[in-house]
Length: 347
Picture 1 (cartoon, rainbow, N blue to C red):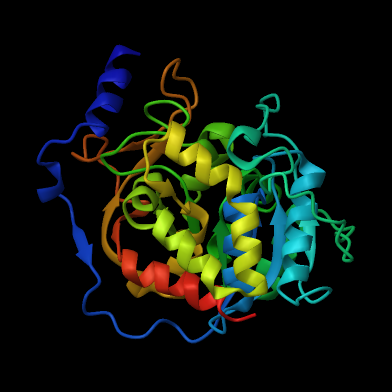
Picture 2 (cartoon, rainbow, N blue to C red; picture 1 turned 120 degrees about the vertical axis):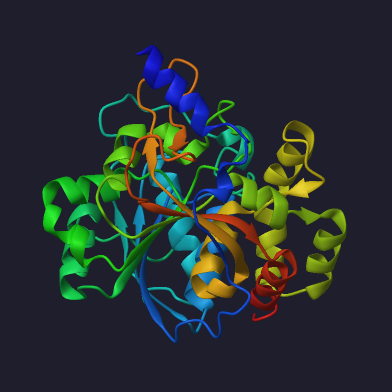
């Protein structure tokens, strides 16, 4: 136990180990892939809604489904938030929304993050009920069906806890080899957590699920809390410019970020609100947004008293295992903000 703890602490150190394992920069990469099929797995609240809006309006993505996982606020409210965002985007009835697991795999429901997102997950906007209804098929079955329908074509973009994906892998393990890629909004690289000092929210809510996914062999990329803090913060000046747009989407953005904006400034020492889910989908839309990555072996802490949900990054290679994740380290802030503004200008 002490040895394992020492190994874990090593993975969080900030020594010179990055010189020992590969680092990738993306300055030479050309245009992004033409059109990608994705499943967007979300615990839809404020920032998820921005990501949904960016995804469904991007000509580079074909959103095959939105699947709802446990997380930010009440499960049915999250579903309504996703459906209402589709309605705002003019996609009512065009993209199916599937409800998945309303609780973590083996743990009790953790509570909620209303203190970040407001009681309705949308900064207490209390939007009317959406016209579209969720599908009857369970999200886990929908994930399996779509992966088998489009083998090696689908990218799963997980911007909430990984419960649905893990349950799909347990039910049909063969899909792991048929998933083109998985992007996970979670973790960090040589930074700090937002739910405990070593972990971020999405892995902490269901660490057992995260561990299953990280050990599945799916080509996996993480976009962490650190990247969002460095490269996705909308300042007061940014909000003023959003408000000046005067579009339906910009009005939606302003409304849903009221509580989050205040929370990030008062409790997370930022000069505005960060947008981790939005920068994750932005990296899928345009991979050149990411300017540096590292490839590492990553495991997930499921039993730590103080470190539950931490992504244990084997920086020194002490476990002797090949890398199983690409970790985003740096992203282009200006490019991200332009992508958001370009989206908000559309309506």
